[in-house]
Image (cartoon, rainbow, N blue to C red; front, side, top):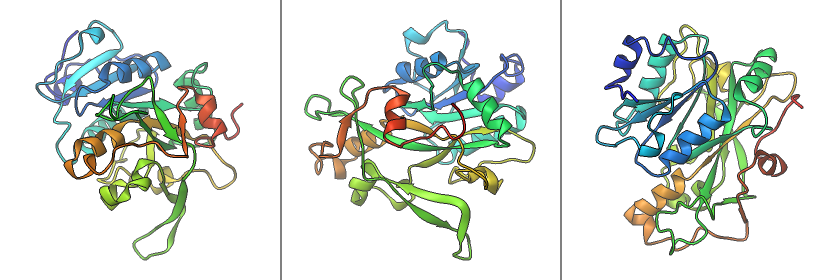
Length: 291
């Protein structure tokens, strides 16, 4: 498997133009934690290709070598502003494509995702005149931090079944933006004293369709305000969930929080079943008009 030295090298080589039709997944690897499971999850979901953004010095796991849908690309993933820079370059290069973006240790789920590919789901979403999809980042965490001090364990992963809420998102004049909310909950809410305010929101426009002139801003919102909304004006739309170990990993890696937290478990914790139906039943995403 060829590893491209940069995103520009990938685009200039013609590899991007030769990708199969369909939505693309872009995974930003911050380290090697669950990189294999993340890549395989999105490959198995049915994305046309998975672009793996790997920091220099991080080797591609041998288990992923030779998989035709995976494209490793060297990228400064730890630099501030990396995600918007990469996504803006991809938007400009591949207008019309749907993109999912996330990090290693994060797993996209959408209604009926075990049996329906992302292309079918997004085709329906497009029919409803939607060009982006609201997703909620649902924090995952290991049940036993003594056995798994990193906070990451796919076998005993838990999530919060309650404790989620939304606040109005103000515009520059302090007025609420139409159909835009800041969603809160999970580990970022329970341990907010260890989380900077800018990192507490669990809302993310994780899926969107590239078009000319569109850009991703530094806060990961999109320049077209309608694409930052959770639904259209006339009814609810599909939403998705990004189940993520990233907050747990950060809280356990940071010295200030590591020694203040000896467990993520509480009365609102429940085992994660790794299936979309559980997330639907818990109200963490919804099918809208798609059945």
